[in-house]
Image (cartoon, rainbow, N blue to C red; front, side, top):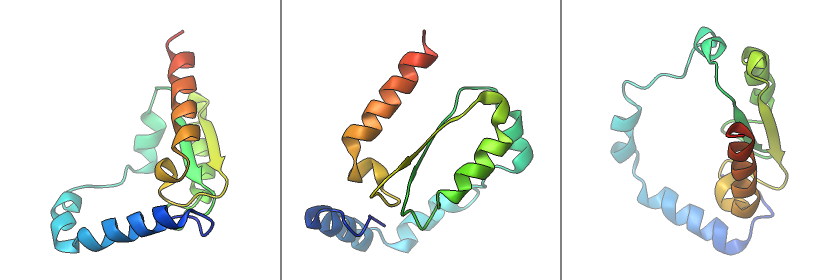
Length: 109
């Protein structure tokens, strides 16, 4: 879930979290959830910040292209974070926090 070049401590933390999170504990969370349909995305009328890790194998960066296409009227801001996987917020928290803060500041001006 993390980029191969992530620090060993982060890899071990990710492994520990994965081992402690039993599937039977998280399945109820997913029951009843549904990913938004294309029409749902098109209805959005809010500023969007889209962040992907370049090595994310769960939600690959190629998905950003589709989100941009579906939400183009919102002029989404897209960032692909190098040397990051699915847990980009753990792999590069400083960069992610900066991107989020900058986005919020622009949205509230």
